[in-house]
Image (tube, rainbow, N blue to C red; front, side):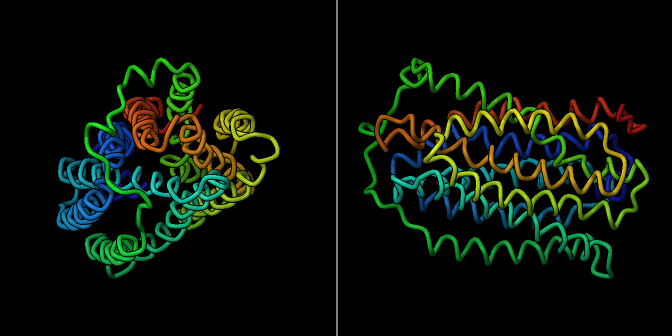
Length: 336
């Protein structure tokens, strides 16, 4: 929303949508490589590399010029996307090494950390950007906070397994896709991601266009992300009784219906209810996919590759989701 209304005003929502679309795409699509590197024992190498690239990318964003789309695209879209992709799957995969019986809950708690960060961070950035500090210094402050968090994360995480040689950890792609359950799960994740990120990128803009004041509309995104924390931590508790796949099917269906409900929302209370409900069900869906994929692995040596390939497939289709949504809105922000 800040890019659309303030920083990149000379560019269309479709062009700006490519920034978020490419970022999300890279977070997932590089998994085909990072998953294999994780299985081969390069966990700490990737964590350090991704952390450094993340700090560098956002520092470069702080040097970008207003209405210079390519500068924001290179730093925020490509740089940040690559950095996040390098650390995301290893962070999920390493949890599966330490937890077997309660793997779904453990991975859900880890995923909740993402939602917690996206709850606090937008509030911080909003106050920084709309104060005397401004966009550029605000990004630098945010980068410093992220850098400290990444240092702590690198010091706290350990893999429980010794590195494997490239030969022993190699998993043929065709072997994975000959598994019907795994192939269907990959397709499911792709379709889910295609529609899931629309509210996250355009919820705030939707509220403002429909007459909600800017300060109120801003907090809808934080409400949605806060609700996602509960979806990622509470829903996995249901899985031991009902089965992780069965629970995922229910919440994926509810999430799909919720996206369509956004078209009918026009009041403050309506947006709050939407943010809470969509945040909860989308958080549950995000938290349940990795443990489902991990449960399909024949051995722990396959976990990184299976998660990586599934996320890579999802990332490719996600690349087109946000720009298509922006194109459908048009420059007049038509939500009907």
